[in-house]
Amino acid sequence: MAHDITSMPGFVASAVTEVFSMFVDIELSDPTIENLAGPTNEYDISAVVPLSGSLSGAIALRAPFASAGAFVEAFAGEPAEPESDAFSDAFGELANMISGSSKAKYNSGSLAIGCPTVVMAPGHKIKMPSGTSCWAVRFETHKGPFAIEVGVSVGAVEGTDWSMVEQNDAA
Amino acid sequence: MKILVVDDSATMRKIEIKILAQLGYTDIIEAEDGVQALEQMAESPGLILLDWNMPNMDGLTFVQTVRSKGIRTPIIMVTTEAERARVIQAIQAGINNYVVKPFTPPALSKTIATTLAKAAA
Image (cartoon, rainbow over all chains, first blue to last red; front, side, top):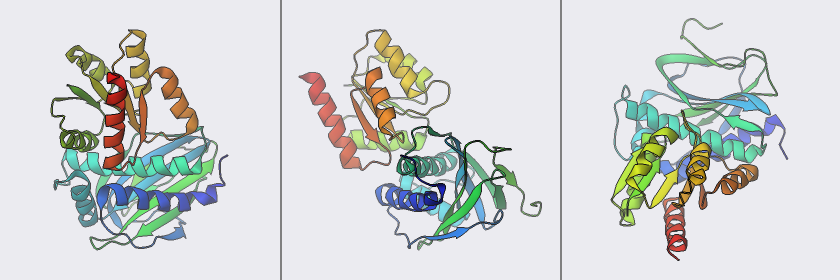
């Protein structure tokens, strides 16, 4: 049976811990979960995975370049330049696994995740679809901070696509 | 034995290939979607590690296609799709085993060994 959407941030936090323990081997702080009133601009790289079906919205893995580089190196086994395909691929796959694991914990057979889209731009914002409830699940590591931003709504919402907003251009 | 690794993530293919190498399997061919995987079937792999969600042709469609041709090559689905209904769907399509991402390397190693042992029996 599917859970209430307010349980999603907790499932995401659990999924991050699971994925990092299996593939990244970088120790995580306990997560902090906060409601998001609007887009944040603390991060340089985002991997956004769209959700559809029983929920609409997106899950975005977000980090500064320094943290993301460390995660990619630990995951892929070798460093990669931020502008390389290898960097985007590895960061996107981490987001994919976190989203897939979150989805499994939410336990709704009709919830589907799409392929990750990776956005790189210093201080960019990710605007979640209108009508979604948004949270940030934040972690600290010795390589730097990162967050998962989650925007979800039950069923379809208007403007179901997430969008990237430039740092000085957000509403 | 030749092993076909199919995943749209190059990083994930690399991780799986590393695990296969640790098991002694170094004759590896790769594909990044179901379409490329169908082309690689000409190489007659003895095992296929297969992602589900991929562009162009997904893993489930690939399984249905090769099984409809009577190809019995063992297939292990390696995917984030963990819901019971999806697992059943894949089994009904003809996969031999199923590993959910994120996985531990020992778990994938064990599943590969088990699948090959059953196929050889």
